[in-house]
Length: 199
Image (cartoon, rainbow, N blue to C red; front, side, top):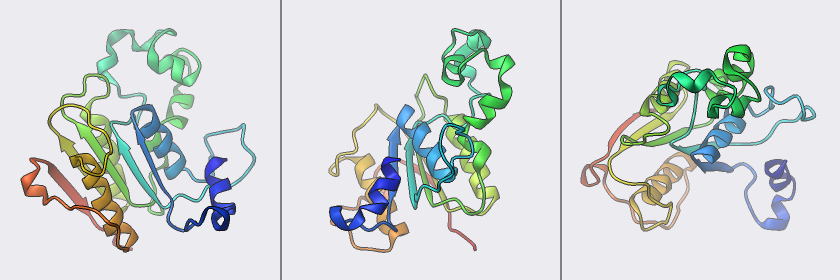
């Protein structure tokens, strides 16, 4: 509802309601992708029918498909596991709920440009989560960028590598000038894949 409120009160806050980007890390990345890829919130029965205006998504180490979390081990099907707690019950009994809570289920050609950043060494959410979503978005011709990083978790400060990558993404997809320092990808040790929207 906060996103919709921002859009409705755009004049009050002096923001452009056509340029809303959701940014999230870990659990925040999961929520950002759920809202951004499913703007009418078909996965959420508790909300009235409404479309949430999201125009860009940036997700850092987010879960894209709950049914494929190998790092949770053989206990992931137990009611006490992280995956089961996330969907409200034992994973084997709630496969449909798991699909509804998985952003990858909502990949479609109308999705907004999406930036996925993932640390290769992430021991909680495997890189395959971002790789699966990236492949799903590309398969429906969505502008998706996947960046796999080395090193430790980093903040989104504008003077940091991740912050600069995010600003780079916004400048490219929003087609506007944003004050930032752009670091060439070849100097950052970052692998990047990108496919522009073909529609």
